[in-house]
Structure formats: C-alpha cells, structure tokens
Length: 172
Image (cartoon, rainbow, N blue to C red; front, side):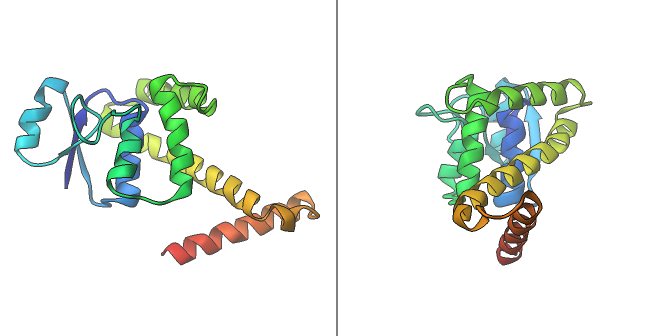
C-alpha cells in the first residue's frame, strides 16, 4: 500500500513509517509531497497520514503516531509508552515525557544529515528500534521486579535479555 504524507520529515513523520512497516504493512511504500499536493496524490491511491485534516493525523490532542495506534487497534503497551515520547517531541508537550526533548534533538540531527526524506526514515529506524527495545526492557524489569531484586547486575541483565528473547520468539 502507498502511504502519503508531507515532505521534510521530523518526529511524527519518521515514527509513523517505522510503526507502519513494523506493525501494519511491512511492504509499505511512502510518498513525501508538499502539503498542497496530498489530496491529488491520495486520489491516485494511498493512505494519507500526518497531514492537515486527515484521519491519521493530529486530532483530539493526539499526534499522528497515536492516531495510527488507535485506528489499527494495536494493543502493544510498549508502543503506548513510545507514543508518549513521540507525542512530547512532536507537540512540545515536554511535561508528558521528558525524553521527548532528546528525541526531538535526534530527529532534527537526522533530518539535517539526510539526503532526503527516504534517507531520514531509514536512519530513524535504528532510533525507534532502540527506543522500543529500551521501553520493552523497562516494562519487563517492572514485571519481574521481585524476581530480579536479589540478582547482581550481570545476572539481572542476562535474565531480562532472556525474557526479551522469549517474547520475540513468541511473537514470531
């Protein structure tokens, strides 16, 4: 499927392609156009996101990443934690997730160091993969808090990594 959004990607428009490819449409094709051309391109076929007035855009105080989670009924608690950070970075609502300040800075750097929007979303994938893994690690740490309490740092790390691998193999 073709997915259409505005050109000159930043936080939400790098996070949404990551989300779409990982959890919705692994064969997604992304098209970046000037805002005024989105309606024309959509008529040729495709799903618009993170553009003014589209269903998968900003509404009810949510950013596009959150809108996509809602629309596709993705129930992964880690993605909702990630959405808080993306929301903070994309809307300057730094009170909701202080990590958003860092994500905004990183995505600005990626945009400045990319040849085009396609290059930027490719470079951003590593950042979102890393954030997703970190947040999953935190969630698992909380889940097994009592069990890991008496472990030393190495044992705790090995135990939690094993739990993450188990989750990955169950998912596949």
